[in-house]
Image (cartoon, rainbow over all chains, first blue to last red; front, side, top):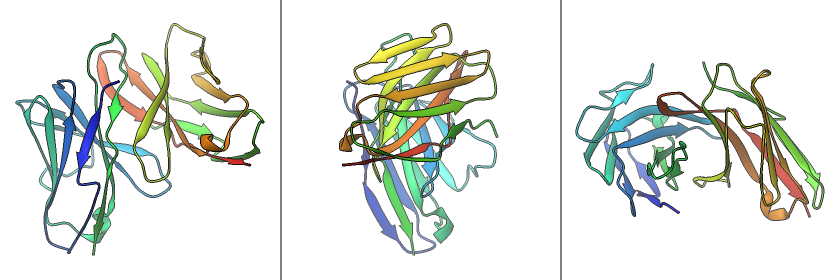
Length: 117
Length: 111
């Protein structure tokens, strides 16, 4: 099956710093990737749709200047949490659809746990 | 919020028993998918059912979809300790790849 990786798997940073999270599709190309945030014992909430070669589409309530998304190639999307604060501590997960089937089966990365001190 | 609801929120059963969890959603869908998430890990795709399908099987999994009631159920038969995880339903809509996740069911299988 299609494989999506994320790096790093966990990161601890100080308040005010910026953190970059990478999402890669390892064996397929993805013009679209999705970024989710998940708080402990809660469900996944879609943050934004990352579009290769164009601007990301953010969900309502998600600050685009806070969560910078860059989808520079067909296999890589990055999420940068700028000026991170403790309330940004969460589990960030990306997904992508290989587009090899007519259905919308998406493959998820293993997630990145961000802890902001 | 368009997020779907799942029930129960948590379920504990003995190994070998069947586990049933339910998902309800709010608007017409194209596909409904079920995912499993082990604690602190990514999501694993289990099964996808299209809006024109009513039932689907995959190994020990059985999924039903009732579009008139906007609901779906996931049945895991002959549960195993390794089935302990959180289970989420996710829906998408025609012409849109975005997934909307349900609130999740935390399943614990007691050996």
